[in-house]
Image 1 (cartoon, rainbow over the protein chains, first blue to last red):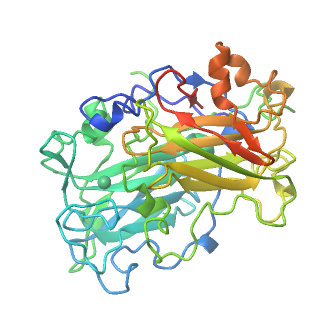
Image 2: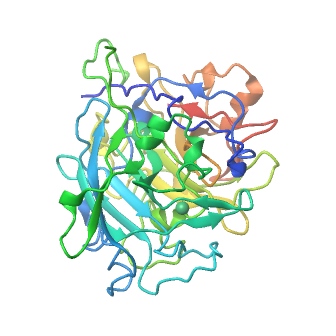
Image 3: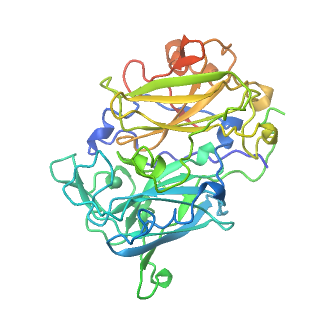
Length: 238
Length: 201
Ligand SMILES: [Fe+3]
């Protein structure tokens, strides 16, 4: 079936210009986006297979050196569905995060918190037939960033998601239930509706934890839905 | 009760360290075997070999040096390597159509080696001029920006997307400059006088 995707609700996402997150000021387009109807160029998109992934790619505790990283051992799992509730199978998820002290392993991160020799901070996996995914990691620390002189990021994991087509491409961040920095974090606060921000806050999921080993958080992801019926759509130019 | 659909997960900026997750080799990691998006068209794929280079400029005209740029394109016959393209099964082995680059930490340049795409079928039987879809994310960009690059030597006058842009000088923001045989320059301006046309796809 070749059908169009639902229009993106831009009021639900952060706007381009959010002055309290200062970097957005010079990096936000000021003219309206040009809305186009889906063509083959937008409903298609890159696809990925298990052949490209290694066995430890989704295990951030072990995948840097094989020795365990320091920090709160944490399972992050969930399901990727679309706006009609259907699972998105074979979606590629890539994650990156700071270590338990809030430090990234990156040449541009100069935060004084130390690197963990056994933590890299990158992971990836594909969703299964029902849209489920799982990672294992350590809970990242909060960290300061240059915005106001005392701006802090609440603990977060960055997520990049490839769905079935270019229209579903998304990068977002996952937060942890109960984080006291939520209302101060200028990046989380770029999202206008608190109900939308709630969707990025993963609740503790004690039933998915591994007793005597790891806590767990559940982060479900919804990608754009698509029409189920095609009437005179002629998307392919047929 | 109004009809409710579950809403899309809201976007957040990719931040300055996107390379760690999406281009780990650029960030200095060797823990993954395969770096994704590094081969758009393998050596045996037919088509004209081209190079696309450019910068992402902010509203002050400064190149952004922490951006990730993704491209998605059809092969030389206008076919996408995707199960929903009716001709998708015909693309050559080694053609992915997907590329990923970062803007260099010093120069701010991104670079793709690929083949020139063909004419892609559009809606209602209206062809689309050869184009490469771009998606860019970075610190300060709250939701990924879609745009397209077209080629200056092609007839773009009937392209359905370019035709929708009212102002001629804005249309030109989507057309690359040919700097030598097979070499194209495509700068993307996030803001200002010559702001690139970004798409809500
Ligand atoms: Fe971060």
